[in-house]
Image 1: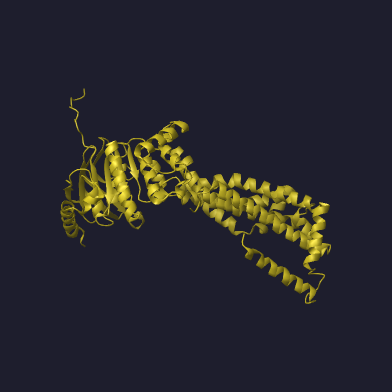
Image 2: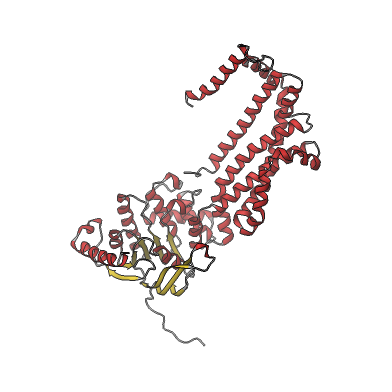
Length: 268
Length: 247
């Protein structure tokens, strides 16, 4: 007999409670570990855009990898779409697009790859991949190989590849940090457009405070390693965001708050 | 192609001509370039030497094919599995440290003095080079790409075939190119010292024994062309097939 349980009408997409994660050091021979994340709590509502901001090496990437099921966790609870780590489908975008795209496949075949891997035929996968790229409004030569595309275009392909199988959650690990200033702005707006269109839950790791605020509905400020949540900052910027918002008083005020927390929590 | 490419060879030809016409060296041992060129032309039009080129080519290709067939799977397995690597790495490294030519006597005992021995020596030495490079290809493949494939829920076998293998391909091709050169060296050398009736190595050695000096020079040059051409073929195949390598 199963106990009756009313289904949660709006279950959070991501729930993290008391997460701890360490890595072995010195080859792991003596069982020594360094703690990357300690007692971290995090919630992302369905369709929410959350950015993680914290000092370098504080364990931001580790959190994403645990969420994606790429790394086991030591303690705590992680639920993604109601399933344990590695249980739910997620899309993952890595910082290094050059190392993450399949260099031997064209842009289109990169996007089609996850569909092929799910057993869809090659032609059908390519057709759907092409349709999806059009839906996302990607304007680039899909028949080009990654090395023939600019950095921004390559990362666009990586984003499309991570979303083409419609995961409920998209995780991005400093995806634009290798790109120049202008391309960053372009990619930010492209990603926001995609997020609005697909209503995907997004967790975005950034080391740029302006970017973290601009993109997010909620900025999670992390402490230096081992990472905990120092503070959550709800971003309420009116209307549709454009890059111009970065100069407004409201934005600058948020930035000031974030940096104050950062100074306190990141100082060594 | 830039004009400069002819400078080096031209300088060598001039030095060669000067050496033999100045009487500084014995003209019998260093005939002038033109005499060698005439002899080379004669060998080519009479077609005598083409049979030797053909025989050497078949031996090299046979040895290379065997080396690739054995070396690639072994190397891939070593790269993919820690246990396979631990069991074989020392062995491969050790055998690779023995000059292939030092194994000629052993191969004579095992395979006699026919084509089999020459092909086997080439295959053996090339196979080692090919397997080591295939191993590095798998071992040094991008971790990020593998992780990306995991986040896409690509099943293990498919991940190996469609992500790890293509990622290793540039290294595999480096191994194939080096292996082909190794195979050329060992086939030519074994043709010299391993009772041959034909082949470029055989022709070089025989013309030296018979003091047909101009023919010897011609065959040495032809062997250079032979090795160079094979390498060019390998390089252009590599560029076309693993076009993304290093870009």
